[in-house]
Length: 316
Image (cartoon, rainbow, N blue to C red; front, top):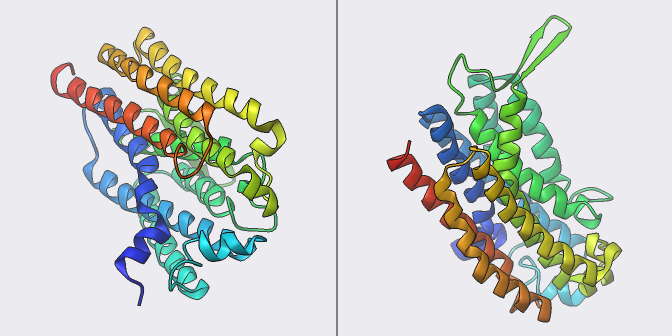
């Protein structure tokens, strides 16, 4: 029987803020845009989203354990090797979580539009094959980009999509016989892309900083990430650029009137983020400085969520 502690470690519950922040941020933006929230859709999506996020984490830990070339990593660092968990038990947990996510996803498709099935299937594909398969995405120079895009933009877009009031054109697909017709409000799509860009960047930076810290270990395990191809020096430059884009996107969204002016307050987080960047540039170590990327994301998007909530209460 798996203990509660083992389950929490297997699904890495502490990392789920990376999916919760896009959800909360998009929830606030949805209310600002549409003046209403579809509560049932949000409850269904939150459970499904969290279940799938945990399922992909279990798959990640499973594949890292099974494919590890380094016995020290497998036996002393991977959660399966350091606990009483077995590969079979981990697969069972993955299957249950994946099934829950799939069922809730199908219910949401039935309540909305077939386009959600297409977007959801793409997210499922990226999530599963991030670490599964002969050439997983995580072992290619695509992991940072796709993880940031799937969680930062994907969750954000789906949250907004599920709150679109009936009769409002945002995005949709109609199947009439063999004719597939798609409707898109291109301006709305660009707004969602701009609003989600800070999340894309901060989530991508968590993956990037993790891969910078793990470069030597990854090489011994035949895991060739973006950091391997561009080198640590350029990876650290990219790390800084992504934060600059995140803050720049917030500023641009306010200037264009896409986001409320109160979000300019998020820019004050730039000071501690800059200090954290300097610390990470000095030392790239999993046990000490990797957590700075998580702290940066929490700081930026906690402040963003609070300010958006204030905007919803007092300026909407």
